[in-house]
Image 1 (tube, one colour):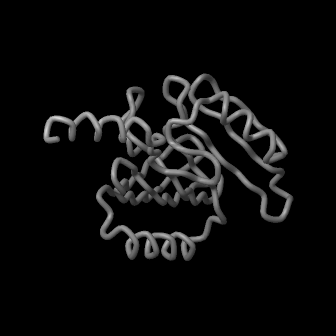
Image 2 (tube, one colour):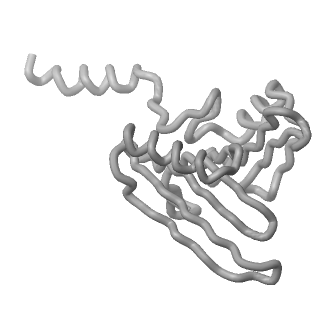
Image 3 (cartoon, one colour):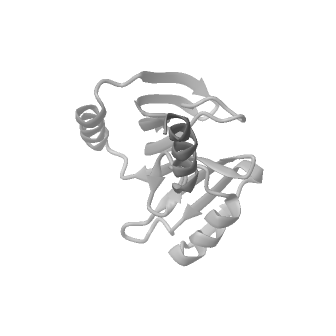
Length: 164
């Protein structure tokens, strides 16, 4: 009986469906790019733009109420990162950061960033929490071009180190 325990556990583990790390809607870590592209068709975005082999932007017109703006990041044709732009206010940043802190504890990584480019200053503060192998983040950016507030889900991969 003792000799059968390990093979039985191994067979049971193989029979289980693969566990995915983060999931946003029907999109999940490790999802093949072709499956992401297929799923995006049913979401009926105003515009879906591939940006090279490692990114897809899916956007609605900005004049639409509740317009969506998603960024899908790939490594070797597998989904490894997802970002969603939300209404960019500092109050929303504080609320999201507070909610994540209550849920995941203190941030494990802070990304302060300030520089001056040709169009003027760019300032950013990103906070990232870890959940298993996932990095869950909220990032607030302000520049002369306006404000951005991004929610992100990332995992380490062979193409870049998370979080970024």
